[in-house]
Image 1 (tube, helix red, strand yellow):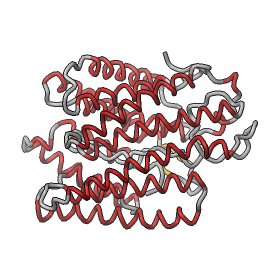
Image 2: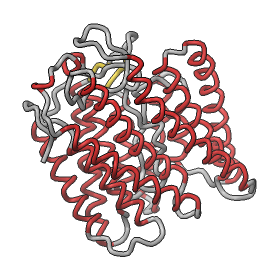
Image 3: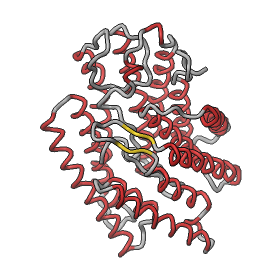
Image 4: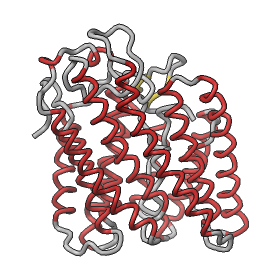
Length: 393
């Protein structure tokens, strides 16, 4: 799967974080930002990122605990890990920028520098980032081992989860190899990733056709991991959207309004951007704006159901985060996100944060879900406000 490709999440089956990646761990996301001087960046960005990394440490503890106790499904745990390593990686990257005399630079990701000055010390980069990648890989390796040790073929979805965890581990290893510039390892892991993704899809397909335990969102997730032509994915997403709509007309839970919106969002977003041969991204403005509107609608639907107990805090967080990913990819492509969308998205985060702060019973998986919101909030606070050099307050 090329960097930047992902499918959005569903309240019925949260998608895995490795599908929802944004490009940049192997490249500088914004060349103009990479060339900025210390004075062009707010002095508080680094502090905000360090706060995000500290919040991520707490989330790591709570998420691992809930996962090991069987209270947190694998896809949700992977989603938490994505935020954890995003926070830790960006904090480490920012520290290297400062040590190199560049100042804070949230928009750029760890990667290869060519024409920026002053130059970044490659050894310093490796020293700062390698522990982050190693920790990421070790956590995923432990998750694979734990699932394999469970060894319950009759358990619903167990075999599919094992396959999914193996894909996540392989992708983490692949990102590390890309960053380190190990071309031989990259080629080997790219082939392994394709094999593991195909095995994951085959297992989910078996679960769907012969056991009846793989839902439409589960299959969308499996297809999104495959290295196939976008047209084939679009055909599958469109058929999934039709099927979800039919379930909605039949009054079935799996065809709930937010599921229909999400299915439409997947179709729209697949045409919202394209990755060029040189790795850069190009935004289709019409489709991007349609996707942005659908993402807002999805958040509003789940927000309406949250007080009634038919949508969870995790559902709300997931809805907000998918729109955040859209905005990140837009920035990667140099597309200016409309101010109204940014303001609306920020208000949604405030609503999400208040909802998390209102949770008093932190038993079960609740602690991890609350901590996840706080990490998302901390990462958002570290973003420079458009048109300024300061982090959000």
